[in-house]
Amino acid sequence: MKIRKSDSDNFKIFRWIRVAALLSGAAFLFNACESNIEKIQAFISPEDLPTVEAYSFETMFTDSGEVRFSIKAPKLLRYEGEGKPYVEFPQGIELVKYDANQKIIS
Image 1: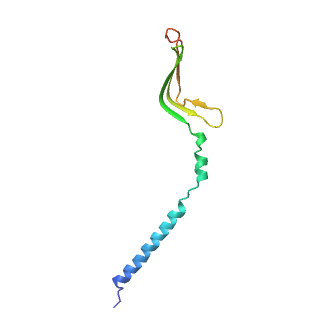
Image 2: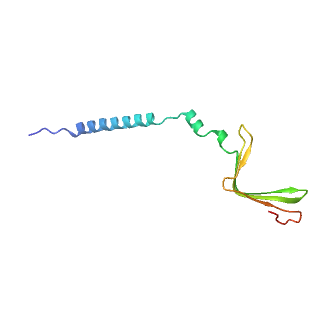
Image 3: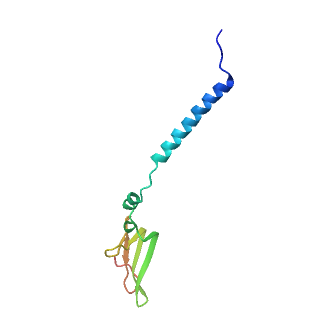
């Protein structure tokens, strides 16, 4: 007749296997995650991001209280980096010019 291992011996073996698996998993997780600030800052530079972002943008330019131009755009992006500030309209722009009688010229 064969001698059976007691349940306590099986429990001890299972416990050590479980501890070893948890430790190796934790070591993998801590070594896999790396926080390199220089890489992150190079990927998303603040100079490359717009300072102003507007949706459904609409404005009017006036002269002596009379509307001269009307601008509409679905999206406006304004950049103010080290160089000259500029504005982009990535989805297009609609510019309307008015005469002195508020009629559309172009």
